[in-house]
Length: 325
Image (cartoon, rainbow, N blue to C red; front, side):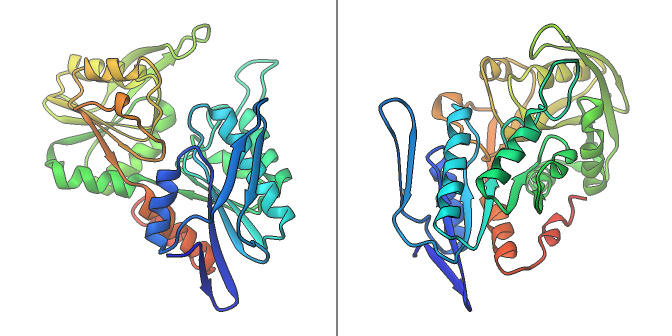
C-alpha cells in the first residue's frame, strides 16, 4: 500500500494526527492505502510542529483526528495539519473527526456562556478546511455551523446490526434516555420494528455531569431495554436510566452509544451497574484500563472509509445513510 490512491488525474491522500493513529491505519486499510508519512512532534514549550514528508500539491487531502484526551492538544494539532496542507497547495482539504470535540456546547443555556461548537467550526474554516466528515454529532444543528459541506455519518446501522444478530427483537424496547435522544431512538424503532420508551430527566444546572431521573413513559415491563445515546461520558445518565427501567419491571438492560468517552468514574459505574452490556464504536481510543467484561467495541473504520471514498469520487455520501434516516 502507498500513501496515495489515484483516480484519473485525482489523487487521494490520507493524513493522521497522533491522537489515534490506530483508527487512521484501519481506515487506510479499508481504502487500500496508508496514511502519508508526517513529522509531528512537540517543542520543549509544548508547541506542535508538523511537516508532511511527501508532496501534497493538488491532492484531495483527508486529515483524520479524533478529539480524545488531551482534547485541546489534538484539536490544535489537527488545525496545524490543515494549515500545513493549505500552504502546501492541497487541492481540497477534508477534516475527518470521528468524534468532534466541543459538540455538546452547541447553544447557550444561560447568559455569558460561549457557543464553543460554533467556534470549533470557525477555526477549521479559518485554517483552510473545505469539508467536514463527522460521526453522530451531538445535534444536527452543528452542520450549519461549518461554512462548507458537512457529511454527517450515523453509526446506527453498525450498532443495530449487532443488536439484531444478538437479540430477539420481538422482546426489545428502545429507550431514549432524554428528550434530546427521541429522534435517534425513533430511527432505531423504525429499523428494529419495536416500541419506544422515553425517560424524562433533568440535569442539575449547578453540578456538572449530575442528572436527576424521572418517570419512564412506554412499555418496558418484562422486556429487553436498549438505552440509546450518542455519548457515554461519566456513565451517570445510562446507569440512572437503567435503574429507572428496572424499577418499572424491565427484564434486561443494555446500552448502545456511538462514542465511548468513558471519563472517570464511568468504568466503575458501568461495571457495578445492572446493565448487561455496553456497546460502543471505536470513534475514540479505549485503553486497556478502561475496558471491562461488559464492554463491546465495534469498528467505525469501514463506514468512515466508505465516506472518504464517496467524497473522493464525487459519489453519494447519502447512500451511507440507508437504514439510519
